[in-house]
Length: 418
Image (cartoon, one colour):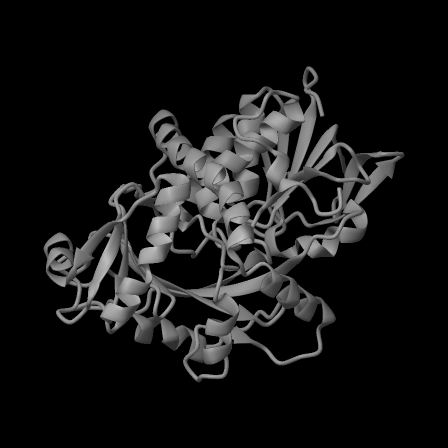
């Protein structure tokens, strides 16, 4: 892919990946149209926990993950839920996931994820300064907090692995040191591991600001515009079909997150994504609100204290493209925070939310050209880290389409089978 004078790029998908791609493409000199079937940022980019966390480099597929999951899968309060159904695609995905649960593949996935995570952290700081993005950005670090000593000690090998391979070390804090750093924790927690360089923001405000910035740079944003298919001529797409007609362009970016598998025939490649439904609850800030975001690995719940609110999120539900809110899953968020915090949530819920995460079994995003149409770039599969990887992905998309040297290697993000 190479840039041309006044070349037109259509970006399909108005989440954080699509918005970031549109921004960097426009800055590179392209004329950009951004198409979103609902409203900008209304999908999984809206209600997540807003963590920008290079510390989360390891994929879910890790040594021992299968056994630890099986032990808890049928427990009532398990954070993972797989809806019983006949779905060969899901069970093939799970089988491939299981085959990746070893140290060799874990290292391979982490090595692919880390460049996007580190680059995005730097890019966020630059973008927030240069574009004056008001998204409640805070660089207070991230705490992994444990209820009992055995679980706390169990994180030691992970810390050593990240330190050895990626120079990413956490500060180990016993209960006293943790309380001194963050007095909002409960008295009886065992301690925590602190990553000082992580950051967080408010995702819905980020997406509102992306819209403002893109409009400032004359990106043509078209909401309520669903794309049904590509128009092709030979090995190139020359347009996309929408309800309002055909929109023609020179280049295309497909950044539609969890619904990407619906485009497999159009793209000409397998896109091994399962929608992993996550939930969040947003409250007013409690009286004793923490300053530092936390993850509670034993309950798989995350807590983010934002300037204008307070959010609990996580759980993983494989129930297909289900659009209902499972009340039991929602209540798990509150129950999962209660053992760790003096005041685990606010007095009333401002918003309850779910979103489909684009989960790939190996944990590595796809950022690659379609084998069927060489002017269509697919950018998807960021798992639970779309917000954390957004700016670097957008910049990489722009570099690939421009034919410029890439700031991170694009090799790890190829479509399978190419």
